[in-house]
Length: 276
Image (cartoon, rainbow, N blue to C red):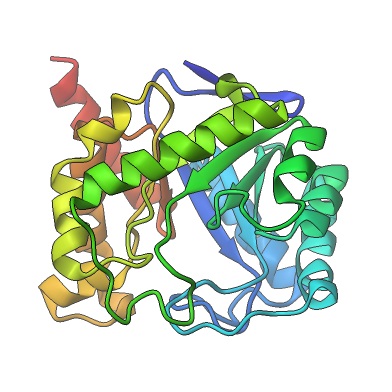
């Protein structure tokens, strides 16, 4: 299974790791740490050297309760970073984590090969921008919006409801001219889901894979890990590795993480078991 990211191809015959690069002051895990251009590029080098198959760059926090940022502010945060990463000779495919069509277009023009949208291309103009860009897209499920998504999320069947939503978004993408070969699905752990719902979803993750498209999961350092461990963000590595291994054994193709090297090691051992 391959995923075409603009002029680069991502080999998904084995699970790969997506490295998180948030250039925001308020992301839940690393807010402010990579807000400067030099720090962002340095961290991109580190993620690349540790083996990240793709870099996910975000300029607007989507943590629970996060406030939206303006278009100009998001552009000023992410576009110079994408350009600098390419000038630095870092060849890893780049994903732009945004819901704004203007940011999608500018990021692809600067060198991004994937659009990773927590709103699944539902914002006005986003679907057309993604279709015009001709790059890979990741459709994520989120109930509500970041400001209120954790207030009281409810489902008839969490996995079934998510699959129904994703099926609708896939159909919208295909109708807009985005072929299925360019689509990745993200069930949206932590986005409008209780702790119990998150773990039910993880236990049933294999069902998402039956939809026939690559599956991306973002579990790294999230509150669902912290709640089980009773641990702060910086103490959630081992729990995150456990969740990553469970996800891979349940069919995840792309694992979005903060700790690239450690996750790659865990996945290698996981794959040795799966291929035995």
